[in-house]
Length: 564
Image (cartoon, rainbow, N blue to C red):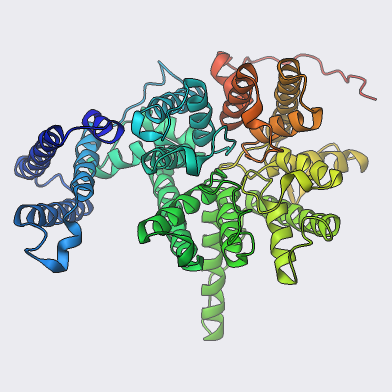
């Protein structure tokens, strides 16, 4: 991996490159030998899925080697494999296989899940910063602070930028950003843990406990099935989105197939992970893209699915399966077993809240901006642009209109949408839709004189209510502190612009009124801190800092406090 970094990150002479290539072939040879010896040593212990992976990997690797050693002209039907990048792809396959054999184990006595979660994000940010500072990652070089800002924005799937992604970073630099977005979106620990489990077939009880906390699994037996669903859903949606984006684009806008392909993949991953990064100077507000309503609809679908959260998407798929099976059997006169509550309370609250916010946001945006930013669009174009403008503030971060030309009332609506953000266990940020829903249900219950929150014939647990109000309070403390500090260091900036920047950073949105690159060094550090806190959540930080107190077998007298 160190050789990879040197190879991609620095310019080399032809002689040095030849030495690197020889070493790559040695690594591939050692990888194939290692796999064969592993089968000789413990054939009975290896599962069928691992055997299939190894056979496919070896066949792909041998085909690549076959093409290289015989030359490009030897077999024209596979001549496209005669490229150094395919050799590096084979190296990556070898690395995945060998790294997964090492196993991943977590010690709860050393670090609790919250601390491990925070350290994993911090580590990826630092590694990303160093990679972005490599000579070949940018065209003109980048300072440590700007690299740190970009890396934090990518890992925290925010999208705020201090330099233009498309023109400042090379394809290698953009690939690093793409990797950081993906790692931040689904979590590097989730990927490493699942690959380790996939190849080794098991893990420690302690690791399962830690992963159950991080994935939100209710049962230890469901930890790795949950991880599998997360990875399958993520890569399936991203692949489908990339394909749809590719065919929605005008080929004349790109110089080559690779450029169009990379654009599709980059925006697919960025959309699903709610990152908001784009290789275009003004995001989708560019000639040839701002009127491409099919492209915008695809990106909306991607970031809405990513913002719903993995448990919700899994539950929706489960419900649709049950619904269609029920209809299928009903039409044929067969008896179908009734399953109560296939769609969970969590899913219902999330879907209702998301739909309500989307509908109201789109309606307000459409009415407010009809003759303003929507003036250049017609018919269905106005609706798609309004829908995009109403959904992107909820942590997506793409923009298809001139942000500086928005009405003040529209900007105020965006503040609210950014603050609420996406749904729990998703790639998005904010206080989350369920938190907002619980707060709303709470004051409705109080207005009705109820002592508890009831919805869909269920009672919301007190711990959920307390957690929701803790998240709301802490978010306002962090955002408010950020606004005050930035206004001290950048007193020449408008308060509205600073507030918008801080809300966007905390909710990992990525939208800006155009002041990000103009901020002072201290203000950039403040925004970096807000992005990080917004991604890992202030409550997680407090859990990581404070020692967990054991429950005591006593109870104090209860007293009411005057509120209003």
